[in-house]
Image (cartoon, rainbow, N blue to C red; front, side, top):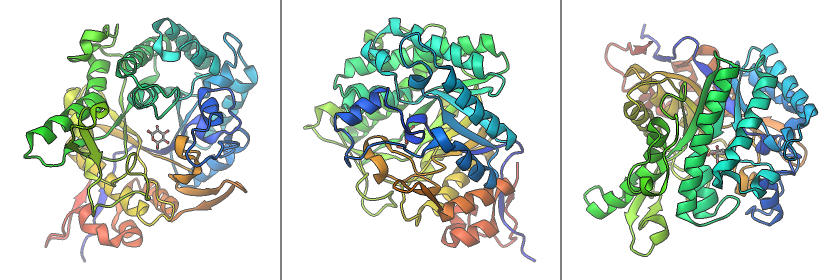
Length: 461
Ligand code: BGC
C-alpha cells in the first residue's frame, strides 16, 4: 500500500494565532490610532468601536483557539489602558489582562505577549512619541510595570511589533499616524524603537531571567521587475535593504549601514539583546525603475499580472500570495544572523473574505516553513494572523484576515474552512495527505513534492 505523505513538525512546535489590542479589544479611545480615526483616516469611514469585543469577551475566542488545539496565542497589551495618563497606572486593566492570561493557561495555551503593537497613549504621542530619545524611559517604565505584574503568567514577550512598519508608515509614507512624510524622521524613529527594544530587553531580563524576549520585524522581499535590468535591480535592492535588512542589521549590531549611519547614532548594547527572531511575512513586491517617484527611491512597486492574490484592492499592501517568500525570508534572516537564535513566524496571513484561497495558501506557506526546517533552520513556531477578523487599521473591516469570520454588526462568529483545517494541522502537528486531500487537493504536489515511484516521502525531523 502506498505510504501516506506527511510533513511533520518538530515536537514542541508552537501553533497559534496572532492579534493586537487595538484591533481586537474595542473601546480603546485613548491612543493615537483613535485620534487618527476621528480625523477621518479610515478608508472605509468605519470606526473601530468595539472591534472584536475582546475587552469583554476574549475568552470566548480563546475557547475557539483551544478547540483548534492551538498551544500558543499571541496578543498585545494596550499601553493606553495600562497608563492612561503619564504616571497614572490603572490596576483594573492589569486585572483584566491577568484574567485573560489565566484563561489561556487553563486551556494549556502558552501566552505570547506583545508590549507595543503600533498604538501609543495619547499623552506619549503628544510628547513626541518615539521621535525623542528621552521618551524611551516612559516605554521602559511601562514595560517594567506590566512585566512585574504579569510575569507569573507569561514568560514569552515580544517587545515591539514591526519597528520598520511603524517608522516607515508613520513618518515616511504618512499612511499611519502621525502621518508625517520625512525620511530622516522615519530613520530616527526606527533607531529609537530599536533602542527601546534593547532597553526593554534588559529590563525584562532583570525581572525574569528565564523569559524569552525578542521583537518582530515585517519582512517583504522586493524583487526587480526585470532581473536583467541594472536599474530595476538597483531600485529593488535599495527598497529591500532599507525595509528588510538595514533594520535587522541594526538590531543585531547596533549600527546602521551607509548612508543611515551618517544620521543616526548607534544603538547601545544591541548585540545579543534578543532570544529569538520574530518574522512577520505576508507578501512580496516587484519593483521597476521609475524616475518620477523620488519618494519611493525611484522604484515603482507593483504586483505581477496573473499571480495568486489576496482580496482585490489591496495591491499596495497585500497583493500577491507568494509561499516561497516565507522560505527565502527565513533563510535570509538565518544566514544574516549566522544562525545565532531560533526563529518564530510571529505573523503570516491572507485577506480572503470568501476563504477560497486561504486554505491552500496556509498549506503552501507551512510547506515552505517545513522546507526551511529540513534545511536545519530552527523555526520554533507559527502564528497565523489572525484568529477572528479584526479591525484592520486604515482598512477597517474591509480586510478580513480571520480564520473565523466576524459580523461586526452582531459580533456573530462564523468559522471559515481554514479554521477547521488549521485545527487539524495543529492537532496532528503535521500536514498530512488527508488534510491536503480535504482542503487543497490541487496543491498536493506543491506541498509534498511530486510523488516518486517509491511513494514514501515522509519528512520527519
Ligand atoms: C501588523 C498587523 C496587521 C497585519 C495585516 C502586520 O503588519 O502587525 O497588525 O493587521 O500586518 O495588515
